[in-house]
Length: 443
Image (cartoon, rainbow, N blue to C red; front, side, top):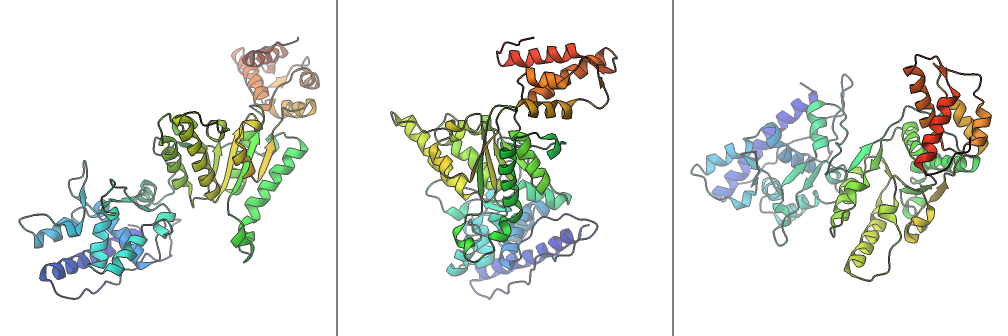
């Protein structure tokens, strides 16, 4: 058993004792509560163990225990309550709700207030503050309070432990969020390196500026003057034709600096229903906060496009979405990359808030030559008729298109059991790429 898991089990015993004390005082209308000395797990880690984050504050840790109890000791609350209410009955002061499949009681914010604060107004307010945005539990996306219907007490919402935290607690390993309706973003990685990327000198210089921010901005924010004036995030637009390296650049930045890069699935984000787009996007931002991720919005025009003149209610709500995005984007503390084929498609209000606008133009002939040279397979030889400088001069292709052409030719060679890449296959691959864009090829 892991050390922190054993510590949690022992701490739940102490929590059970506290619940018993609280109920005894409540039903006897008298008595004094002696808060147990429940401390978070220590810092010691053995055998390369990856632990979930634990709050250092005792009250926050006890709040975490209350939320965790149904996962580890399902009957903890009911067993104690039954001693005082053997015939059952309502107990609104204790809070708690019933779930769908789970037959026991699920603790709410009211439960935490009752157990940790009793009827002390000041302490009850303090417990409520531990479930607000600036607390460790919320900032680290460990614990949240389920929203309730309008008019109901806020603290009557269920205490929800994040699935990532729970899996990390039970499995003892780092867990990435699963793609789905609750998190419409995919982790993107690459086996390529910076040497595989071919960009012009000016674009590379702007990428270097982003690298400098990633490496040194943390130190800049330690300055007493600048930390009050500079927001922690960095926002950049990558624009240019498809296949020119925008996604690869974002992925390589994450690879170099050890940061996860998540590409936002706009098909799951953008909704025709009023207010749904903001809700979908909020799920991503909420999970990404304090995770040190890079967020990559491909085809960002769908979200960050120009606002329209207000002609009807739909236009008004669409513009409200943009206003929400402006605020949320500025609040994101990490690197946020928008990608678009055209710079002019991005709303001017967003453009003013960008730290950099990086152009990824179609490669020049010399850059295309470099791409051809870097893409030709190592296990297949090019037949003598292939002259890469001539292909580079003659055919206007992006890096992604050149990769598609070489891939097509390699498959053809292997299908023939041929050890050579053939010029005819390369030309046929070029034709296919031109046809995608409805362009005419000159042979």
